[in-house]
Amino acid sequence: MPEEKHYDKIEPISWFFPEHEKYERSRRWYVIAAIITAGFFLYAALSANWLFALIIIMVVMVMFINHHRLPRQIEFIIDHEGVKIGEKQYQYNEIKIFWLVYNPPATKKIFFVFKSSVRPILSVPIDKENPINIRAFLRQHLAEDLEQEAEPFSEAMGRILKI
Image 1 (cartoon, rainbow, N blue to C red):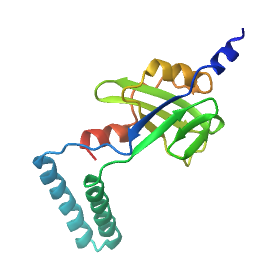
Image 2 (tube, one colour; image 1 turned 60 degrees about the vertical axis):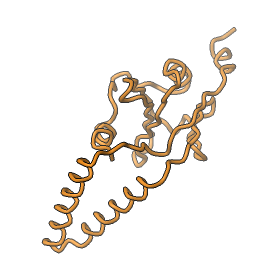
Image 3 (cartoon, rainbow, N blue to C red; image 1 turned 120 degrees about the vertical axis):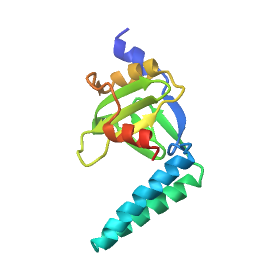
Image 4 (cartoon, rainbow, N blue to C red; image 1 turned 90 degrees about the horizontal axis):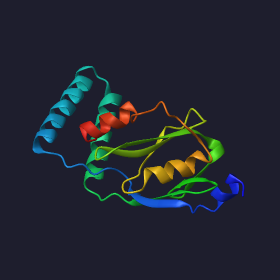
């Protein structure tokens, strides 16, 4: 039996993950964030950069709203056609490469880089799923970037800064 037909019988892999990370933040975090935000806002006001001031206000509002609501649970499916995140389906021919970062408990994610340069890197938490099964399934359809051993800098900074 050819190897390709054997893989066609493997069941799709799916799980749910929260829409965004809900961080526990200390009083100290809020004090530092307030000081930095006030500094940026003061700079915007003194330099009469009202667009920057508006952006600061919008970022604060988005963070406030996200902090006070529970994240939705999003279903993620890997099957023989592609990957599906919520209602959005990505065919394998749209995805350039993938890589896994599995360093529990800090980082357990899979990353997808699209062929289109205007699409950002897609990161999906794998939580309790088996990374070996995920890797084996995806390698049937996609190239794995074996040189990537860490999450993108922006992901790491977001996690460290709890934003």
